[in-house]
Amino acid sequence: MKTFFKGALLLVIAAFVGECVEFLVNLVLARELGGHGMGLYMTILPSIFLVVILASLELPVSISKFIAEKESKYHHSMLKHATIFATVFAAIIISLSFVILPFIPVFDEYHPLVRWVVIILIPIVSYTSIARGYFMGVQSMGKIAISNFLRKAIQLLVLVFVFQLLEFKLQTSILIALCALVVSDIVVLGYLGYEYINQLRLLKRKPTAFLGGKMVRKNLLAVSLPTTAMRIFHAISHAIQPFLIKAALMRAGLTTTVATEHFGLMTGVALTIGFFPAFIAHSFLIVLIPTVSEAYAKKDVGLLHNLLQQVMKLTFLYGVPAVVIFYYFAEPLTHIFFESSAATTYLQMLWPYFLFHFFLIPMQAYLIGLGLVKDAFIHNVWSTVISFSIMFVLGSIHSLQMEGIIIGMNMGAVLLTLMHYLTICKKIGISVFLTGPLKHSI
Image (cartoon, rainbow, N blue to C red):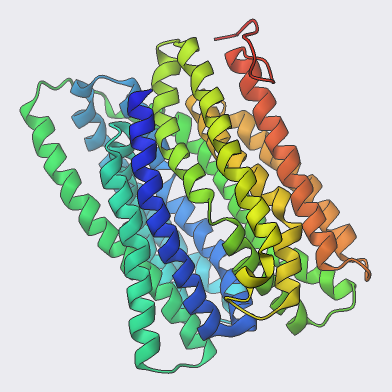
């Protein structure tokens, strides 16, 4: 538990600084792109992240789980096979991207170079994923914290420097915003790559045991494939979401331009503010995956119970005050970006969406550590189908519009949280009230 809390605290501190930087990034983008531009920027991001997910193949998760469960003598051999596997897979994704990306219509209204930005990201993400997975597995959270901060700090510096230097048309400004992401990822790859190579040299000096490439790939894919499938579904649903929301709002009587602006206000302002405390949940996620994996491999039921209780308590302690602040100080917070009463209303209405996501993120790490990725995937499918249905039906009603969209989003978050939580309690054999153990199935 000491290792868990030490790693979590380090990540939380670094992530807090990083989120402050991320807040400034979104502030710069909001003022440079405007409401309509932010809507366009937020519309294309899910499609880019979908390619990034495919490139990573969720290797940080599978490698960290493998490293946490295996003795250190197997690490060097596993990493060698993982690197070869990632290289081959990245080459395949790049080849497919050259063929497929020109025919994806979502890129048509953006600068032609945006497609090249996506292709450049693929090898960067693939190799960064290996290093990130290794450091997560050995719980070297300091390096993860530094890399997370570097990514956001470099992005902010590039944006401020370029936008202060020159003025651009909207299409070019969106391209520059995306290029800033690539530059920051290149810097992170350089840092993690350097540290990773140094660790490989140290591992060579220690006793090593050989692992077969087939066995390594089988173990990695056993976690990567269902996790990637879940992330792909999540990315696809987020890529569809902007168009579903706009279609519903247009059915309710709004024009395409107004619908895009309202989507931009919700995602670029309300969600940016509301998810600010989520850096704590993401810090828990990074530390929980190897910790839960190791505890589950050792059948340490007591530690699993204790971890769940502590994480739920800590999430409650920061989550509830956060959403209360967002609700009562919504107007001054949203006016930092735009003086829009609509953005203020959206932030206030989304408080259940934010609160339940603070619980969802560490729960997902728990499910991965317990080998319940398939359950997590099924939960995501059901909650998304129900949420999207409510969003489209209520959002199409003229008297509701964006309020109907937000009701559907809140319902989806509540449903997904309950399904995750009940599954975890059943698996580790603990009461849903966290008061006492049940008959467990470990």
